Length: 285
Image (cartoon, rainbow, N blue to C red):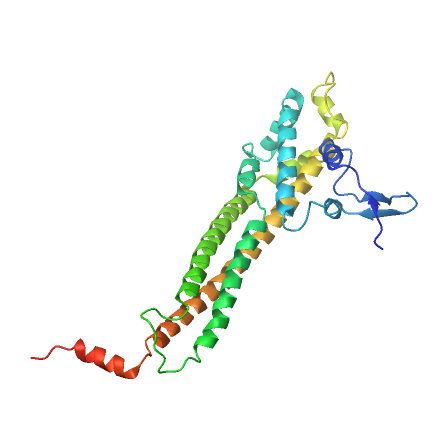
């Protein structure tokens, strides 16, 4: 039986990492229900201990945590001493101050459940048409066929799924490519620099300051790690979506080929009727 671990409330976890009480780069200690066994796991593994966090929505979870940090850093910069330190570091790097990525990441979302559902539905439709097409290939040559080719409805549905899903995937890929471009242009080096600036350095700027968090360096450090994790998972999502798009386009092309083959079969009806039709359509002078 799998060991049951005592996991802190999710809001408590967010509060602790947001305020620097937990450092993301360090292992997190967890205990079993009876507190006689201790286990050390990474921050990412800790997130996956929650029942409603899984691989399909991990990107969305990370983007929400990232947004939490962006809001918290904005609140911290309302303090003039913290804003002065931040401005000073940007100046040392000869950079203009960055705009947050959060609004763009939030707009993208990142939940893959809808995408995977659409791709799964499309593939099931393709499998069904592929299976039925092999049956239709064995139709007798002299069968009396209607003007519609066999499986017309099935092919129409499959192609409809193809268009809907490829359009959805293309938009996903475009959105995530835009986000990656913003990640690459983001001056994360400034925040890495801030992550080694302890409270004592802020007090040098203003010895009378009383509102500097004791763990301000860990707050910036946690932001850097969340930023890096989100960037990494953005790359992973792009690769996953690109593979989905490539595989789906191949299957769509195959379905189009099958449809063309079925159109040929559909016109192989009663041979005498075909000949008579050709005669009737011919003009003589």
